[in-house]
Every structure is written in C-alpha cells, then in structure tokens.
Amino acid sequence: MADTVTLNAENKSYEYPVLSGSTGPDVVDIRKFYAETGMFTYDPGFTSTGSCESAITYIDGDIGMLLHRGYAIGDLAENCNFEEVAYLLQHGELPDKATKAVFEHDITYHSMLHEQIHNFYSGFRRDAHPMAIMCGVVGALSAFYHDSLDITNPDHRRISSYRLIAKMPTIAAWAYKYSQGQPFIYPRNDLGYAENFLHMMFATPCEDYEVNPVLSKAMDRILILHADHEQNASTSTVRLAGSSGANPFACIAAGIASLWGPAHGGANEAVLNMLNEIGDANRIDEYVGKAKDKDDPFRLMGFGHRVYKNYDPRAKIMAETCKEVLDELGVKDNALLDIAIALEKIALEDEYFIEKKLYPNVDFYSGIIFQAMGIPVTMFTALFALARTTGWIAQWNEMVEDPHQKIGRPRQLYTGPTERDYVALDNR
Ligand code: CMC
Image (cartoon, rainbow, N blue to C red; front, side, top):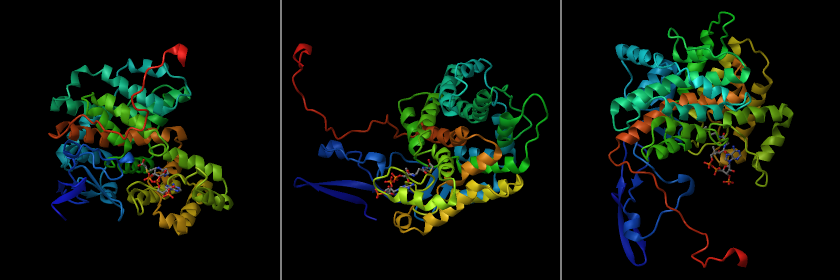
C-alpha cells in the first residue's frame, strides 16, 4: 500500500499519510485536512471513517471473522466462560487460573445494588420497558459511587468497570422482577455470572430454584457472543459521551440508549415480533417480497449488517445453541423456529439477498432461545445491554488511556438559511 495519499483540489496538491494497523484496511490520516484545505470530509453513518485506534476487537466482514484480542469468537464461545472473556476484553490477555479466580471473586462481590436503588425501581410504572429502567438505573449509579468517579485514576476506572460489569445482571433481572410484581432476588455469591442472572430472573422466595446447567451454559455463551463488536453505534456512543470526560456510569447509560433502537440491539425483539407476524411458513414469500420492495419500509429483521458481508460468525453459534436449548427443554415443534429456518433458507437463495450480501446476523436466532427459556420479549435487548457492558467499558477505558484522545466533535455540511435579517413578531 502507498505511504501517502494525494488529493488535488483547485490546482493544489495535498498529501496525507496512510497508517497501517496490525491487520485490516489501511486508513488515511486526515487530521490536518481541514487546516490545510479549508474543507471538511463528509461521511454520514461513518461508512468509510475510522473514529479511533483500538486493540480490542477485529472484524473481517467479508470472510465473517470476529476476533477479541486476537482470539476467534468460536474458540472463546466454546472454551471460555463469560468472566474469562470479560477479563480478556478489559485486560488484553486471557487470565491464568489464579487471576481468573481473583477476577471472578471481584466481580461476584460487586453484584449487589445499594438498597436505596430499590426506590428508583418503584418510581417506574410496572409496564415500563426494561431498557428504560436500565438507562435510568445505570445512569443513577453515578450518584452512588462518588469514590470511583475520577476518570484520570486507573484504580477508580477499574473499580467502576468492575461495578458496572457486576451489577448489570442484577439491574436487568430486577427490571424483569419489577414488571412481574415479584420481590427482587439478591445475587448469590456461590453462582457464576450467567447462573446468577438466571437465578435472579426466575427464583422466588417461596421455593428452591435450581438453575438448569444446560440453560446457564447457553446463557453464558450468548453473553460471550454479545460481549463486544468494535465501533458499532452504541460503542461509539459510549466513546463519544466519554470523550467529554463524563463518568463511566453516565457513558454506559448513553450506550444503553443507543443500543435500544431496532436497527441495533432492538433487532432481537423485532425478529420475534416479525416471526410472530409472519405466523405461517406459507406467508414467507409474501414477507420476502415486502423486504425486497423499495416502496415498502419493511426489512427482514435479523438480516444484514454494516460490516458482515458474509455469514455473521455469531449467528452460526447462536443457531447451534438454539437447537441445544430447545432439545433440553423438550421443545419438539417450535413454529417460530420452523419459520425462521425456512425464512433463512429462502432468503439465502434469493438473488436480492445474495447480491446485497445480506446474511442472518446475531439477532436472528437469539430471540427464539430467549423465548424458550421463558425470557419475555421486552427483556431481549436488556440482555444484549448486560453482555455488551463489558465491551463498552473496555472500549471506554481504552479511549481514556489513548494519548491521541480528544473530545469528539464532528463537523457538518450546513444546508440551512444563511444569515438574514431578524423579523419582528408583528411583521411575520
Ligand atoms: N432486509 C431487506 N433489505 C435490506 C436489509 C434487510 N434486513 N438490510 C439491508 N437491506 C438493503 C437496503 O435496503 C439497501 O438496499 P439498497 O442498496 O437498494 O438501498 C442495502 O441492503 C444496504 O443496506 P443499508 O441499510 O444501506 O446498510 P446499513 O449497513 O446501513 O444497515 C443494518 C445495516 C443492520 C442496519 C440493516 O441491514 C438492517 O436494517 N437490518 C435489519 C435490522 C437488524 O437485523 N439489525 C441488527 C444488526 S446486528 C446486531 C447489532 O450489531 O446491533
């Protein structure tokens, strides 16, 4: 690749350095572009723009590859638990046995919420969406942990990071409990991360509840699959919010808000709604037709990705996990799964989807698994947020430590009125 890129404009020539990462496309360093040319670059949706330097996650969308700190997602999902992957994302290396035990202990012993946080829950309507509760409660944590808010102090950052990772399952499970009018179930220190979440979701004080090991293994794997995904909308939101020096609890609350949208984390909820709406395999062609119709806003939810132009590697593991969970639960005929499999087959053979390189993404099967586990649809995105917190916080820490970090401040192509005379109210 060239060392520089030359731009010619108005009989002048400008040269910009080309930077290479450890793998992936090179980038043109245009930091001096405006100062030298007086022009901005224009890239809505950041389709060609690298916003930061990062050593956490790498995606090669053309071949369907996802690596965390160099390890393939398939290897991590098969061999690690979520806590190990969380450690890897935060610290850059997989932990040895002793380090893993210390990390798991530290996370476990931060999983309780301050008792006064109960009051926040009771301020919400019972039918509040769990994501609304998550935004509110996570943002409110910054009012409880003044002792760890100095973002220039690495110890403060580590404690805040551990608090966020540890408390997220409790916050999410309590959002569900609140919607059911059931008492909050406290975390148990003898349970692993995924197990503890299922325990807090489904136990009641009235009887013993044993977490099914197949389901907790599946949940653990689902959390791993959602742990990080490079500079997506919510991660970029966390970084942008944090670039002003905002505290990590506020930044993660911003990330949750961004994740909520149906084009991002809200897609798993939208997939299930779509499968229910299709309702019968005979109607699949009709919906595929709608997805292809330029005049119809309908899209096949769980299909397509900004970066993957091949099968999303997470979707493959998700499809296998889906089968394991349904087998364990003895679900023989699952109408939604049948529709999903038939829909996937038809879409993958359709010229429109082939040409646009639209493949199933991570959300296509996750909703079916969650529903089989008894998790209500509105909790699906909350689960995504719980898993993604570990990626968000790793990316936030990396940003704070980056010597090139500046407050994020995009420019614009202004198309509004130019300066004009003020018109007094009586004359308008
Ligand atoms: N169904 C039908 N057509 C689609 C779909 C779809 N799901 N996705 C993209 N297209 C078409 C789109 O209409 C466009 O066509 P044309 O070139 O003729 O205008 C072309 O494919 C490119 O789409 P785009 O919207 O320009 O691509 P994007 O990179 O901006 O959008 C996406 C990516 C994920 C928002 C989009 O594929 C989509 O809306 N998918 C459905 C929602 C979904 O499943 N989201 C979950 C993403 S994975 C989880 C996560 O990371 O959050």
